Length: 177
Image 1 (spheres, rainbow, N blue to C red):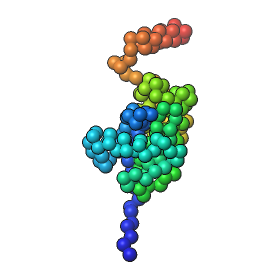
Image 2: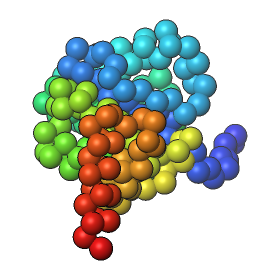
Image 3: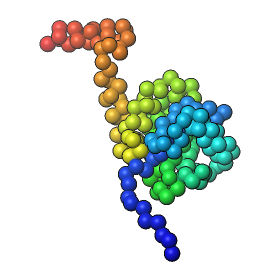
Image 4: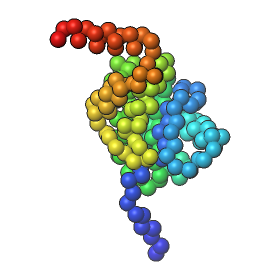
């Protein structure tokens, strides 16, 4: 009897994807070299979309990977792990991402709203998963941390309006002291 004993690992997530209702990539972050080129990644994404966009289930096994997914209006959210990964852990990542975005977008989780708030999406995914390791599964904490990081925009990356508003606030507070 040839049994494979796998060492425990913190690296549970292989990829996080968001596709639109045509199967086109809106967001993709791969955490390992399972699909090293963009061409292979896009082919994999098209395969996932073709297998999942007409079904109501939440899990699929595809190309030796566990795919957990959810759809909302015109978006498809995917969290991908290895075939031996705990589906509940992957589902907690997916739920955290979806609930965080839902709060950040004020329950308006659709393509247009997401495209207008891509910075928030990037920050949220970075707060939830780092290098394939799950860091956070509480959407409240993710939204709080994204809001904190959004406030710390360096002066060089602020718009003129933001700089003027910040200057007005500082002058107002210095006069009120």
